[in-house]
Length: 109
Image 1 (cartoon, rainbow, N blue to C red):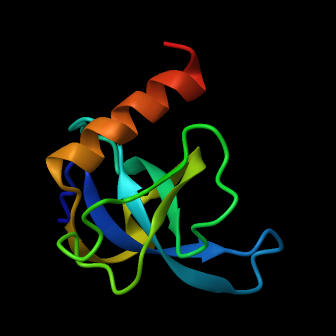
Image 2: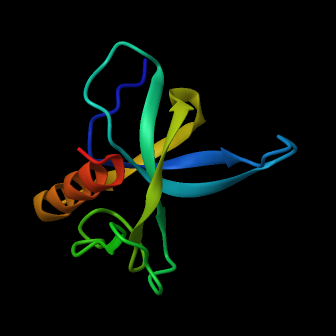
């Protein structure tokens, strides 16, 4: 039974909108522990230019298990844990704090 923790970096099967195929992309789990098999995630991208408000480049992307400089993208998604292929790492504390700040800003909290 999979168990994913807040701030874990995972590889996710993102389905195409027509459900004909999928892409594998990294994401960060942002929900607190919960019995549901649905997770809240925030997408990550290697496109680190022209970032919007609240988006930022991870300061410790290498220590988080990522291969290239990576940015947090604006948007929260709900996925079933079966779409996660594996865990690749965890956000550093400074990046986790920046993500929490971004989430509060995006949601106006």
